[in-house]
Image 1: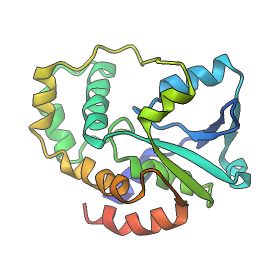
Image 2: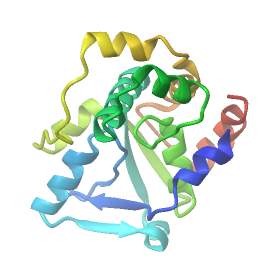
Image 3: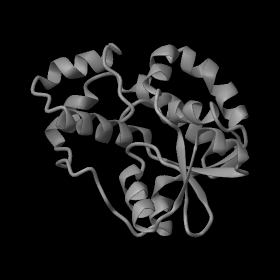
Image 4: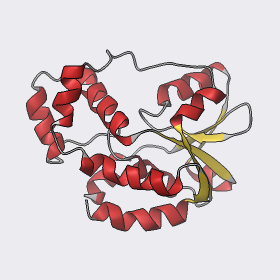
Length: 191
């Protein structure tokens, strides 16, 4: 399972330096579009790949795992214009279809750890909007209750449980990314 999620990350790993000098790692469905738009509008400095290891601390905003999973799956359905939603959800449930929009947030930390070995500050995504005024979204329709219930009919635990553990232990703390990835690599392998 871990190998499948690793294969998703073939792109660059980038962080944004906000005007308050806080360095933030944007994650899909965790204010990603708002951060990118704010960065563009304010000409924020962006660090990528080998430049990341020169940084002292990176802030990572985490979202409620179930809310993020619902929003992420909905985004992919809309983005890909998926019509046979039950079959698509079956593929997600069987890990035949995986995507960065709904994969566990811990996987994003594994991607970051390929280039960065320092401390990460884990905060709630709700705090992001205290820092930036943007409320940009990808522009897809909000999830309906009917679709939400349909998505919740599959086994979401395999996508959300590890992030619940991550947040329970480390939310609102600063910790070495090496500590987190070492601890959660074993947990992720069991999913």
